[in-house]
Length: 477
Ligand SMILES: O=c1ccn([C@@H]2O[C@H](COP(=O)(O)O)[C@@H](O)[C@H]2O)c(=O)[nH]1
Image (cartoon, rainbow, N blue to C red; front, side, top):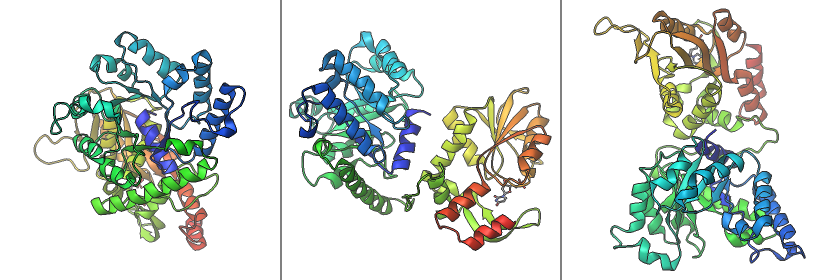
């Protein structure tokens, strides 16, 4: 999973845009962690920060300079700290070293040995300095565009407020990497600076810094920095909060305040709803939030529905609706992507019409060319069975929404094979079970699914979205 997906998954799981700076700053160490051995005190404090916040933040950001300042033991402490961070939470190493000669070896150390997910970099040595970090496809960089140091203003605002240098940095750095590879670091208490950055880079993740100096500024900062989906902005947990004994509660309250604002912001600004979980279940299904969202936006319906075969089912799944909800669509794509990454193929194919948007999204994410079998062959023009370019002999992974009998997806796969292509794998979002994967196997295909229908129904019943009667109707069908 790349940094961008890992970050989005944690944002969605922990419902948080907050990140914590894991800095062993001897000047900030709380009294209860001060001991005769400074390093032990700092280590205990860092561990406390991680334990208290791991379920409520989306990333950690250790600053390399604080560890280096403590000498060899400081670097040992950094390794211990990195190892203590739960593996699913992304780590952004704050290391604005601007030395061209060391960037390749530094990138290798931090990404392959220390296994951090992203790094902050200074822009002034240009793309040459940044490029060695971008050769790691799963990693990202954050380019420092603006700092809040009063003394920096004379450079950052040069030559004037209409075309300041920091916006040139934003504009130029956008050419260095894709939005998944390159985010922006903006330190400011001035919401106008964030607003200008956001309007120039609507597609980038912005890591906000130093926003807490002025009381009551949070709403202005959020309004200026959030993107149109109500995210794309990483917000630091205030430094003084990290020294408090009830850190966990304070971070949770801040998270709630931010999420309330995001929710109102989205309703005001867009026609797409943002979904927040209303249920907290222990040992929940890994896709529980996604299942609930699909139910809440009407993709999973219960009642009497006649299927194409003439049979009546007590449910109907309409995954075509996901295209109208980018938040859900993005998560659905990530779930397909996890399966596809383990398979070998040259091209992706979607089964029309329902799975064409999904296949398109996956093709762009995986940088894999796409084709599709036509539903009906035209009586004019090229009379093609397959749209898109391909070479006979290539292998195609077929993507579809739901397997009921397997008829439609196998018909599509047969058309693909009829032009000399090979199909081994069929990947769907939902498997209706009842032996359909065996049927695929008998026909020479290996079926993969993100979810089974029983996982969906049991999860919905467990959290009270459907009643006992609906569960029974499904179990008896
Ligand atoms: O709840 C449902 C049931 C079916 N569909 C559509 O049918 C095919 C799958 O049916 P097969 O019998 O496997 O051919 C699926 O691609 C959908 O287009 C549905 O959307 N929802």
